[in-house]
Amino acid sequence: MPTAFLTRRVTFAAAHRYSRPEWSAEKNELVFGACARYHGHTYVCDITVKGEIDPLSGFVVDLGLLDRVLDAEVTQRFDHRNINLDVPEFADGALVPTGENLARFISERVQAALGPEARVTEVKVAEDRTLSATYRTD
Image 1 (cartoon, one colour):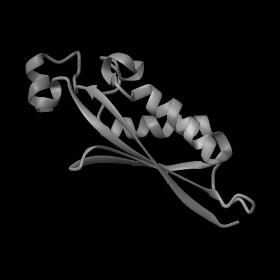
Image 2: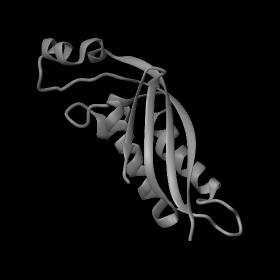
Image 3: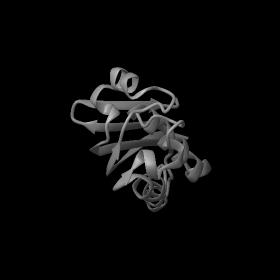
Image 4: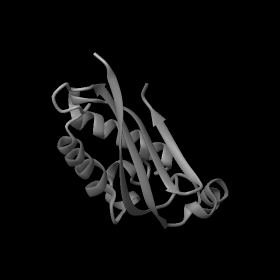
């Protein structure tokens, strides 16, 4: 069966900082610069899935399902949150909330929620127009 790729974009506004709790404030500032202090972004997140094209709907994934998954796993989890404080996986001592870690985390959560319905192949998280991180599974 032919396969196709579908990309859905979501946005969320969130605050974060880069920090390792085992490091001194000075080392965090040296390694992470200004990003060692809390600051915020309006993130743009593109999630690409692939799958067989359904001969009846013409889609690779049920868009209603995809939108529900993205709302639960991305928007509700991150929008208007402090990622370090409100998302346990990014608490001090856990994952540093870099674009790379956010993209991987979102990819894994969306894939788990979609199940076999479609395959997440790429997640791109952009903090602004000049910086983005892409996580690919294929």
